[in-house]
Image (cartoon, rainbow, N blue to C red; front, side, top):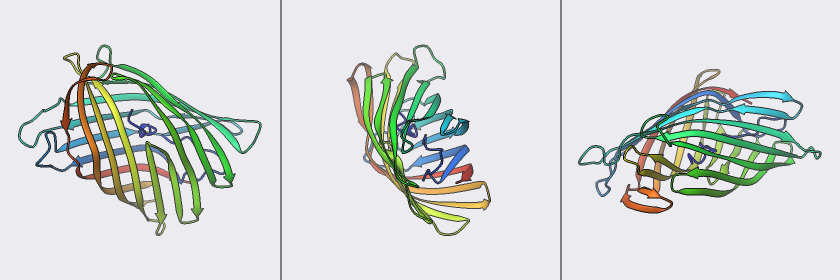
Length: 280
């Protein structure tokens, strides 16, 4: 999974667009570009990652919302000594989320089915994947919510299942914690109306079908600091330096029978992004 921007995001896609939520913003449009710096001891760095997507919430009725979150991403991973250790891979996904109320106003149920195509080519044969997440949100206090649930995706290496735990927690008017682990967790501090900063953890797991019939599995864990700058009210530019940990590149032909496992190499990266952002 592009876990979880990919909830999170990975898949990474937060589903807390509701009264009393602590999630500090929603992005109807966002583009992110990441560059991983060369690691002389690794087989497959530097690399680039491009992600473009949107979160489009629609209120259906009281305490009931639908969220469209389509996105596209592509990985280009090169060797420090030769190009194309693995081919460029890409994904297009269509998550459609629902926030559903319960009889208890402190609880909501979140359901996020995801259909996507992950491969060396877009919409190539047999590159379809079906997955999704389901989790419950409990309001502890206004602006303070906790979450727990499960994520599942039919990856090319087999069924991938991951328990989820997270929070949308407004500490005070200037500080937030939000996210859904293991996909993403962020801390945000408001310096002023134009400047925000904080720290983020992301865990990424994806598999892509290659044209030779094998699949590529990508695993990355990113720890970063970021600075959000608003040159205009709804326009956000983000600078995010960080470090990737426990990276792995694996290829295989069936469930978890890997043919190769390469040292992708832990190392620094820089992420640049821009978004049309509505702060809440």
